[in-house]
Image (tube, rainbow, N blue to C red; front, side, top):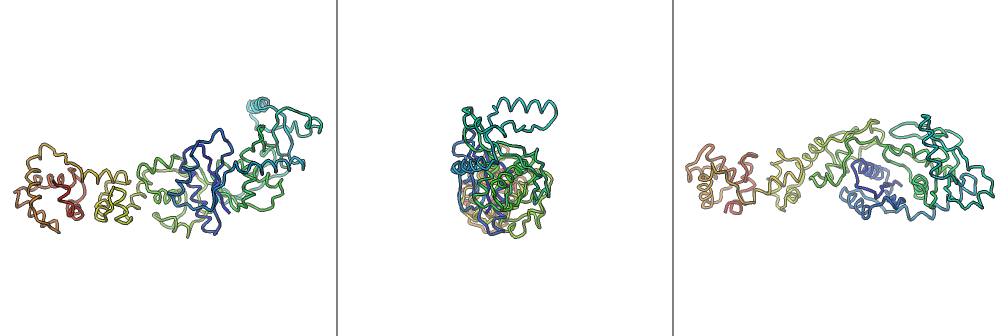
Length: 421
């Protein structure tokens, strides 16, 4: 079982989407289920409807999953396991106030030392714990030996006991900390490999320690992905006209060894290997994404492509395809095609020529070939060279420059009566 565990606290960024993609691919490769766990334990930070927005984005990117789980629904299990650790003396009640802890952290910072809890409450007599009415947290007893993690990307990582510390697993309000909830949930869901961003590396030994103390014997695999520089939110890219398949292509390509530049997720499943991911940060380059987006638009079915510019016609799709030399996103492409079917803006210098040419075109018979059409209009109007080509382009495309007009005519010839009125 694999899991993707986003928090509903903000917009999804490409670094997070990359984690989801890699989990999806590895789940397919291993023939295991992928679950979505919404990490909503911090109620104050949650944003209404962000969870559904996350699921909608996953749907757009065809990232399949077997179920959706909300972390907050597991609070009863978190409480029960914290109590188990207390009973087994593997955790203890801590009555140290947040202000006192903060003071100790500041003192450590001033001394240029790493803050480490001094276990002041670990050996309190039972009567001082039972009868104490002061607010308290629950801390897990620090490990007594080095914790070693083997990571698919980072290799072997070692964490000393003081680096893990006697950290808090239950807050004063009886809610679990992120590390405790995450560790327990991964255990409950029988997760086999955790693929996540490297910002969580410091949490990994803590979560391993929690499961060890709970007697969980399954050995989890890890893959911590390097950060993405120039990170941006997914919604803005979609709104700008980047295709989900192109974004996916680029996120898999970034910092990775791939057999080719342009591919689908289905193809990536055949050769993707976590061990090939670079250990260096991945840099997001919008120009590279636009290049990949353009390549995906070029190979798209013509009728499907036409839908992105407001039609359902293969000929308009083919017309849009020839404009891909000038456009790299569906939004840019639509901006090229839409004016063709709008009222013409005629430059004053060509007003007379355009009027004469429009009258000739309206009376012209249907021509399948551009050269026959051109010869007829030239003969009827007496126009040639720039006095012919510029007005014709304006009439056909509502622009003074663009792709080869013969190619444009090939796909617009059945629309001549509609665009020249």
